[in-house]
Image (cartoon, rainbow, N blue to C red; front, side, top):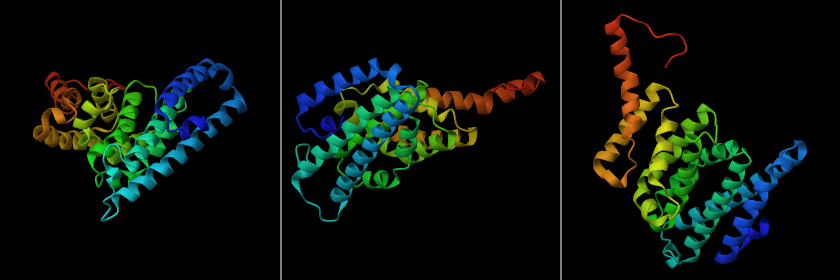
Length: 250
């Protein structure tokens, strides 16, 4: 795994990532027993932290005042390093998801406030791939493959939803694996797991972006409609019928 993470040769990386993911999937039943699973997961998370630290260093360098290195075009060294570490993190997230051990990754990513702050200071051509990580997490939560705590979901949205929206146009055209409908479904489902007041704040903020950007913004109309009905539709209908909701209903 370490050799793959450090490799700069695109074809070799691609083939070995695919092979290792396949082999790890085959061995999941063996590795998910006791201490072996804990050791394996710990090693994977150590790799995640190393890649994240390297990614943050690149962002800090690129965000420095007066940084004029040609590396910020898509073929420059800093942009290539950002793309490499992003690709590494996406691969490690795939492995953790297969092992049903990605919840801690969501927490770690949600806590990357410095990275998210620096994000807006970089040219979109070199930063947008980082938003693929956020998109992948939203998809995982939406599908029930990742089950982070409510506080983590709140922090994820607070930290990374706005950068994701800012990069959305580029993600649609610059990420071959990007599936707009699946990502939007994941974002919407994640928002709808939060308390109604937070849903309202997030979705009204999204509405302003959507009305200004259209297709360059995630389309969360379905989530907006669900929130609206939860907030306004059902209570009014119950009031008209003179009923109260049964315990445990939403």
